[in-house]
Length: 502
Image (spheres, rainbow, N blue to C red):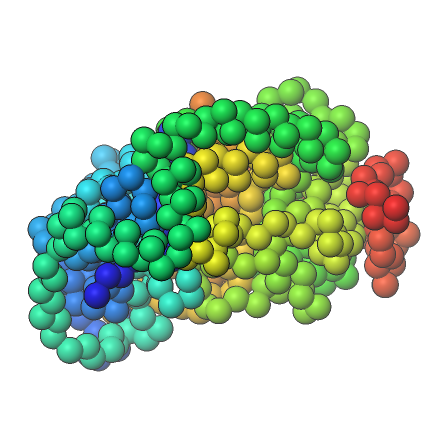
């Protein structure tokens, strides 16, 4: 039976291009000395990790399949069993040089995330990284988003970890690859599917990813012109180098702050936990902007996109226990990086987020394939370029939030830290993820090395932003018991109106 990529899978697959990749990652810091449970194995080395992953792959069949494109773009690509699947190609052992400092680990992660995935093999990699200074080991998973599009498709880091030290019992996996279809069979099958939907066939021939698609270069240019004109009429994000054209070279940085102190700040200022997280993010971006421009104008903002569920009434992201972001409703809001006072900045962050989460104009356009009712992505290359062009200026920085994640174990060993590494798509030079894991809030930053060359400094910026909020006095007139809505401020910062009343 032919197993085609869904329209969403194919959309992510075709988002790859020069300087951009739809691959995301998860970094776990594991303490092999802390082993729980009488039946837990506790040994974590290369051979034991390969054995664990090999047994768990039965839970995620796509991880042993390759993407096989259809000639002339006549249909969506196929999931096909990899007849030459070699798990040792995908799982790799690495080690840090002495002293194994966090900066060395982050530089290694950056280099590994910069490398494109081999599209002739299943689109994932896993690295066991030894040599960390404190005796811990790191496990990095790198997965293309097309493998995990949809709630039923889990990311590998979630598949190989457990809620308890005792791993679940799984049957022995006796996987054998299916016979791969030939190119003739693939083409005939695509034509047969298309004949049942003539409109799809026409779109595929004219606008597919095959040679005929070159005819549409003129249409592509016309679309760019129209999009440029439309952008002058809508409320776009502020000009920022963070929307620069992306290269394939990455930088990675990570930092964490105590969760209990963040909760204490939220209680002291009578705001939500997520308001504190966003205010710290604003402080980071304020310091970075100062390092680039030497100064920040009063009223200057950076526009971010984040999950709509981050504005739930209880003030916490209600997640599903996952640290891998699913596609879900999002909205854009502004972070007032031009505000000097940390307390006032926090109030403005809270007020703007509350306001824009309920504004239809601030809901992010849903990232869906064009014409999904046809069962494919017509004119894949054209549509993905058009998508990037249309939405490249709707926001500056994506921010993902996982919600609170309960403790995990890897082969009986305690996982101390989990960082989500977002995909860095076109026209985005920086992406941020926030996980609440254990007793800390863990931030991960990934950036284009050519644009944000000082990314490692963001870890220090985060600590500075956290400290200033922790020690900022509460001004009664600034934080009334019931926060005004929309936001008002003692500063002269005035958010754009979005023309919502017009």
